[in-house]
Image 1: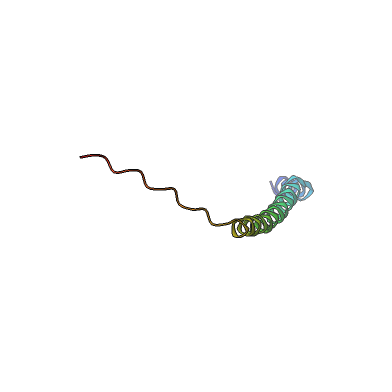
Image 2: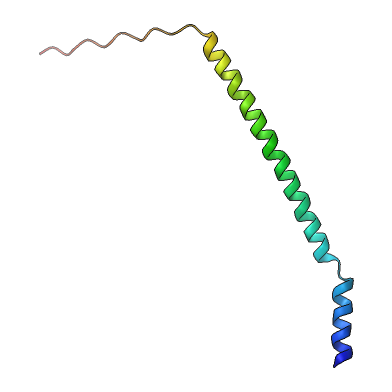
Length: 71
């Protein structure tokens, strides 16, 4: 009984699949952080670019109001 228990412990210690899954999870987390940082930076730059374009355009005149209905 004790030897079967010790044998199970040895098998668990040799099994590296859990460690590999943890490593993949850490890599995926690091990639997600990089993507979030890049998208945030890119989004800010795009916003700044559109604001510069907006500010460079002359103010558009409002279209005339439609005529009032008769009556």
